[in-house]
Picture 1 (cartoon, rainbow, N blue to C red):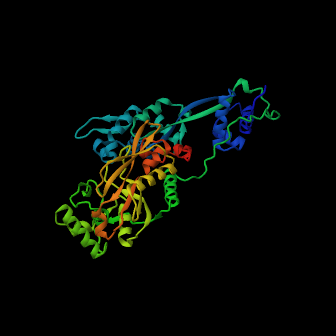
Picture 2: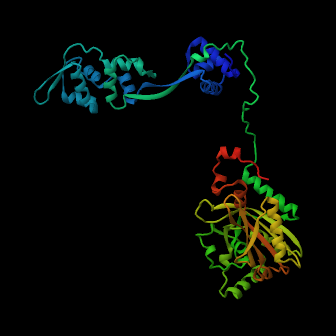
Picture 3: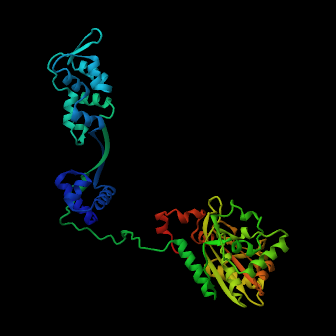
Length: 467
């Protein structure tokens, strides 16, 4: 008989030819294989019809809390017998000693025919009837001792039933065991001499090497694209004064986005030296003129977890006032939103900014198209929209072949004069940006953004790096 056998299978067959039947644990001892190798070999042999595997459930017994107490101090009925060994005693005397065990002691002692009760006044008397030989329950308690015993080893089932009726005297543990034996088909295999053929099409063991998380791969790729397009990265803190997160971007102080329901604020924290006096005066004057309300310094000082990365780029432009520059900021942002398949309270965002004398909206659209092309997205269109701090503003959309529809992706536009002039920025500023998770979802074919954070090892190991 010709069979292609793995060395693991051969060792298991050889052991079973000697012992007829075995368990995985015994095979580990006899074959010197690991438990995982034994289990794997058993399944292989079963699939080839060379082994029969049965699953058996065994019940183990152990003394519970009250059972152990009875082992050390005696059952309630034995304590009763010990109390009347020297002579009869009244109910009250016994009850004072046995307390809550009194009723159980009387009932079981009478059942064992150990005692007799003489009614009288003011209290009945309990006396020993004869020699109180060990009861079946006591013998079973001694047999069990402090160790676990197999239920099949118990001879007196009636005593076991009685003890199980007593609370916390017996605990049961159900354990499943697998046994393996050779099938008739396997008994003619000579594992000592038969090597069998080599199966060149057999699957090799899967190796899971270390790798970067798919979302981190996307972040690294986006950073590399920006650098290759001539951009420099600027960094900023996750916690920002409301001045840079909102006020500098001409967001009115009564705007809904600035409420607790949309923004995470740091309790009892106020920024002090967050901007120059000129920057603060000019921004406040812009708000008073544009929105026609009294600008509040205290509101601008409130510290918040940044809701976008624009606060980083606008502060960089305000502090440096470059005539020409290409910069980008990338990192985590926070929104006080309900988590869903397309929204997270914490996610990653990237923003690109270009400042120059003659830059136009057409330049911005061209940069967007090139950025998307390098990331692997070729079907792109732009749609007019509204954003608070850019004018004109566009929404970029990409076509998802898998879903068969257009998907909104990044927002873009030219910073409004109300944003740039108060900060001393005189050249036009092009800006675009959006959530990185949305791009990653397109690249990896996901419909739920939460998949990136579920730590599903099967998906993390199988997700191929998209080009």
